[in-house]
Image 1 (tube, rainbow, N blue to C red):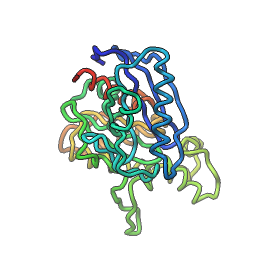
Image 2 (cartoon, helix red, strand yellow):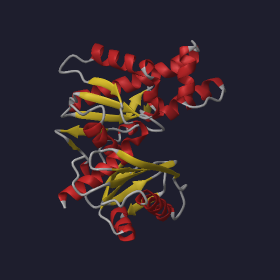
Image 3 (tube, rainbow, N blue to C red):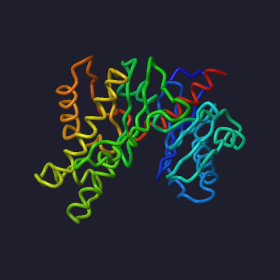
Length: 300
């Protein structure tokens, strides 16, 4: 991690779970902790700070960190250290960086969960050898982060919300990408068509492998929509590699084979990206947060 300032803590606030890691200067994870993310309420931000401070204190029992990195979902303005908006967690304009710094008395690096995941995959994971890459986590929703010449682009906190892009969905209907292609959408769409409850997209994928025609149709529609998104991401950004993370990436060849085939068949104007699974799993965000902290210590 190139941090001469000592160990750092990285905290990733997710929609349901908050993950934290204690990382030394070489990038080795010394300890990790998890805790439930507080549900949306009028004081969610304060309760998230409470959880973060508790995790930092717990990890500090191993060794004192030199800095803490915190990343959250939603619209995030890293330059001001402010969480601008999160619909799922119910906050707006929260100055997390300054609030956390006041409570723990340490330097705080603050950022966006997906952009932090992109940073981690670029420096430590599946995009290590690429100068230009896209990190595409596909879980409950869909978003993306673009690494260009080693830097993650933020655009004031608004970059990467590709799940909100409308796509054609037959019969001249338009629907958001993540309403078709996210892991959450796959399970919902299967249940809507069959009336049969499923345990997430992984259960639908299992039914595809077993030859279930409805599961196959839902899966094919999702993969086709994702493939189309990869085409226009490639046209716009020309990444060397697209790193697909999130729960859907666990489907393996059932996902990656048709995605790769779609790009190879339908895009021939410039270099084609390698499409690979994320290497860091659900620790990408917390490791990215630790990198933000390490960078902060290195800069100071």
